[in-house]
Structure formats: structure tokens, C-alpha cells
Length: 258
View (cartoon, rainbow, N blue to C red):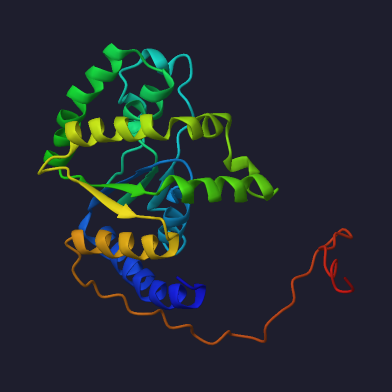
């Protein structure tokens, strides 16, 4: 999809996202959205498209690092529970508790007993969240290996994107099939009526973002909430320039003659 066409479709969706957040604040809704998928599937891009227009006071993006030594001794879900939303908040998880069923399983970062326990506990854990009123949405971003390889190559060639290529990402290139098998086992164990998975084709990232955002908005019981624009009264006096005492001056014109 061309950028101009993408932006044309994205703008009305982002307006709906703002309306969704307005409804969320008034209704006290608690929303959790999980974004899962292979490395370079496009999780960060769609999360950015959603969060870009939302008030960061009630929209949080969570991308947890690997567990600390202390966290590794806790109940597996414990550190994720601390990130769950309060009333009027939405939390976007850039990878989530499903790390255990993906990278931890494939790369051997957890034991088989820990993995099997996770598959047994995750439906129960999510049912508890939903029974308590949390609106939970789970997305898997699908991408073919050839497209994934193109994105890896782009990141390797771009100094501004190389940080996105971790050693684990590079190791995953040889385990495309293993990650697919782990994904299938995860979906089988955790796809349920109360917490279903939604698969979104992200071989075209722009199209994928639009489809995911549209689906997300359609799943929420958003109702119109009055949101009148504030009226700005005239200033009581002429606009003033910002001035500083003590000889302090702001930096300016650094690139005026570049």
C-alpha cells in the first residue's frame, strides 16, 4: 500500500481512536491489547500508529525486558499483573506473557515443566481478567519468512534501525519452523471463546495496521461521548516575548545556514 493511500485511511481511524479514549475515560473501561508475532512482524509500527494520537496519561505501551534474577523466582504472571490498567486506561503490550510460549520455549529459556504449566494456567488467568471486567484483545501478526528476511536486511543496513536486531532475533532466523510449531501449540491451548486470538496479515505492514485498528475499534462497545472543543478567550493584553534574567539565552538558529 502506498503511503498516501495509507495515511488517507489512517486519519479517520485515528479520530475514532481518540473518540474511543474519550469513551474509555468516561465509562471507566479497562482495556488490554496484546501484540504478538515473529520478530520484525510489525508490532512496534502498529502500536505507534495507535498510541501516537492518544493521551499518554491513559494509554501506556508496555515492552518488558527479560526478567531480573528476583522476577525469575516470582509467579510467572506476576510482573505483568503490575502493568494492568486501572479504570479509564488502555495498555498496549509489545509482546506479553506469551513470551513463555514463544521465544522462551524455542530458545530453551524455560523448562518444559514451566512451559506446560503456562499452557495450563494462561486460559485461567485470562478468564479471571475478563470476569473482573477487563476488555482483552489478542493479536498475532503473521509474516512470511521471505518478508521477514527483507526486514532483517533493512534493519541491518540502517544505522537508525540496527538496535531492533538483537542477538536473539538473529538466532531466530534458523528457527522459523520451530517458532511456527510453538505458535500452533500456543493457539491451540489459549484460543477460547472468552479470549480468542485474531490473526492479521502483516506482509504488507500498512495494510495490516489499518485492518488491525479497524478490528480493534469494532470489538469495543464504544458509545458517543460529548466532547466539545474548548473556546479560547482573547488574551487580556498583547502577546509577550519570553525573557530570561541572568544572561541565560535559549539556543536558536543552529541550522539556519545549513
